[in-house]
Image (cartoon, rainbow, N blue to C red; front, side, top):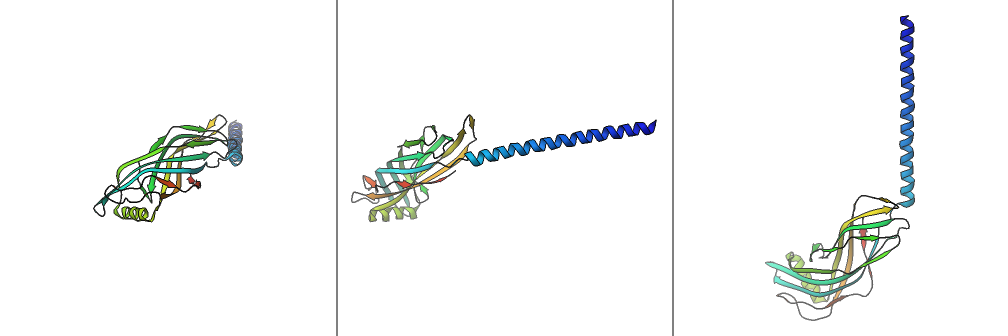
Length: 218
């Protein structure tokens, strides 16, 4: 009797082991199938980062004051026109937070101007024309010397920067947030004469007439 009982327990244990093995195999196959479907969807619908173009940058005020190396300050008022195109055929873009500012070399010279949250549909183009302001923004002495030299030469290279967060939208599904960083070179040519330190400046300033392609990192 004990032999039959032990044999029955062993058979019962074998059946349970076989059931769990099949269950694990089914779960594994399901996970692999889901991952494969996600991979196919990603390869077919993978988002292409938006394309930015700086169409115009007009500087109304650009004054450099102070005497390096003691202290130097920049006061700036300018308007820029940015266009962005969504190159995706099946993916929309939510721009939840975008800030635009101007930089000379690697230093920010205006405050950040916020762009209102925007949705961009498939292959849509959006145009923004924000004003950028900076009053007595301190800059490094060696950068102030560079600004003075550029003013005397009549040309200055500024960068219009965009920082923020976006989300991708596919059908009813919306992704989490992704950081976006945009940098647009703006080569400015001074119209006026005079300026320099102690509150001097050149006004107005215009940039070259061709559009400037921006670098975009997402």
